[in-house]
Picture 1 (cartoon, rainbow, N blue to C red):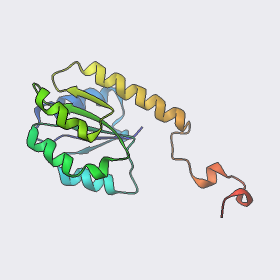
Picture 2: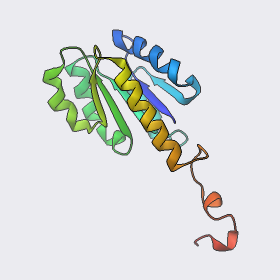
Picture 3: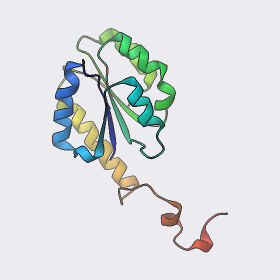
Picture 4: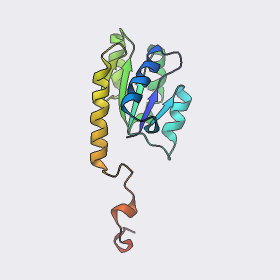
Length: 146
């Protein structure tokens, strides 16, 4: 499963969460973006399509910036981590349509459990762990749609 983790360098919870996630998942399957520009570049890249995007929001200004680029997030599963005492941001955060919403000071085991379930679901959709290609779906070239 490919995970894209977005957390700015100023976000104190981003580093801690990245360390916890890297204990569960290999760093080969994770891509880190620490600026909004990097996040958009990775999401626009046809070579890398994440199965899940984990967004660590530091404050309401950052949430507003993420909402401004939500068109790039429409077809990926989002896990959203709001800052502690970010209850007032939760309503606005739902505009990103997260699969799971948590707070940075919450138990990280819940977040890890969600990532595990997403990994299982992703692997069951594609047992090879790779994207299904036309040649994999239609090994006989005469069966391929034209």
